[in-house]
Length: 343
Image 1: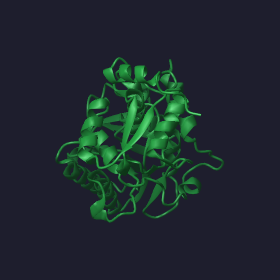
Image 2: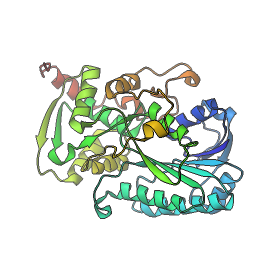
Image 3: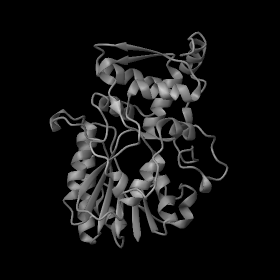
Image 4: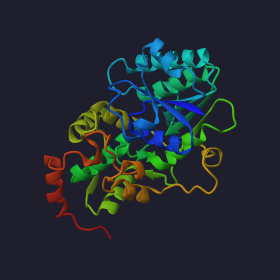
């Protein structure tokens, strides 16, 4: 099968490409920036430049492929909703123009609340799902919450908050349930979405553990051996938390704001039939603690044989813990020595 991967230099896309190559697919990657600055697999793929807001560029990228992975999300700026909408419409037009049989979109868990109560980012992803489903291609959306793996924005926020906040102050509204999924499991589900026999639909995808956000921070601390105190605080405005967290971590502020906004609601799977529909028989999902351990591994010498959970050369500069010499990290190290071990 000939497959177009958009967002191929992003966190998921850069790890999905070698997974597809290993399955024997011919892969074309669409990149928005310098096509010469690509990961180690660049010599095994066809490369095209594509601005998703340029309908002609999208059409050229889609021409001649059997399936498309749409891994593009707007996260920042006042007009990200409109940009998401335009990009999805351009892709839908190209899918129909070139008779593409399937499109797979990585979306986000949708909490069971009225649509008008969704965060702007989740609402935008849901709108993109609807637009892609309007094409003639079979449209499969995978809805994930927190992705665990070195370089994943949501995992890096957990890592940096844990390592830089000696006392973790958690607003009561933020301690919702989450169901993280390891990126290796998400990759298996994405690959399986190419062949699942169904009409247009979405699949919730998550790991085996459901836990509160505070418990996720606890699990990280347990795996790493750090000691942190947690204090629940009521009545803290969302905007205050977003600004404070944005200053604390190196992850881009719009991404931090998006994650915090989503934590007002439980982000867990409503159905888990993806396990049988998308995953290979006998596949065992990684639990949270094992996923964290693998995410904290040293960077490999050869990215071609690396664990996708581990840090890779093309991950962002802020991945892998970011500023180890930051004031927050130094203060956390001092305070942690004064916090007794938990029984």
